[in-house]
Length: 248
Ligand code: NAP
Image (tube, rainbow, N blue to C red; front, side, top):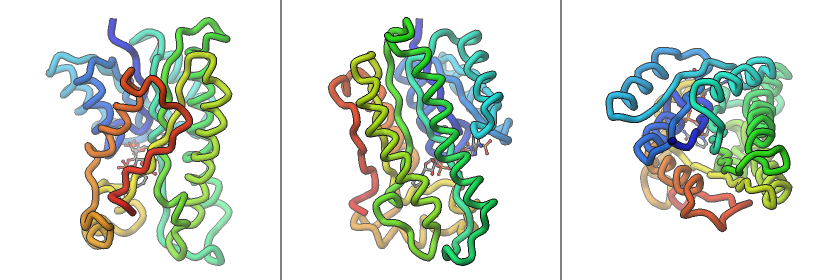
């Protein structure tokens, strides 16, 4: 039986590249999405046509009841979870702190931080030997912005990713003896649709050349790091925060 992986926000961008690569490496993949059902369904069909196993799972990860239902559906449809990629995340338009609203902060932290913690909690309950599970791996998607701070851009988003870094370090140590590895990947500037959702559709093309490596990264370049961290090849790696940022 294939090992079961859940990728949040798996229908588009870095999550989609991760789901596709993981399926090629033999994972049965639950592809979570919030609203873009078609993108998730197209990816499921693509994985199945190639002989892999995938299901699409709608849930807003910021909503506890929806997360609980998603984990139940994943278990019923694919079997016991062995891997989680906490990838779903949102940005907002460029702004200074003194221009930001409480509603904006709540949304960023609800999705990027609380959503990741909810999913990790449900995964730990199922994977930890403390609860009768057989172990697993969690990869949290942070951002280079947690180091850079993103002044004048979105320091609130950067702070939410700083929380993901700390959460990764703590959870890794908390569950290391229970068969679960927890790591984070910090992408730099990656060419996905997230920049359009932040009002800057050309951000990757414009800012990419300012990276030491002189270009933006691709979703697959991040996916390769994520899938490695999930794999037995990373069996002694836990509590690591891996920069995939072209030197940025
Ligand atoms: P993207 O192309 O905008 O895709 C975001 C994904 O997250 C979508 O699949 C979306 O679902 C999902 N999502 C958003 N809110 C959700 C919610 N409440 N519940 C469930 N799913 C939700 O983004 P991306 O660039 O691939 O980014 C993926 C991750 O990498 C994010 O955590 C982001 O912060 C991080 N990151 C990206 C970059 C970059 O330059 N691209 C750099 C650093 C870090 P729908 O498809 O249903 O909308």
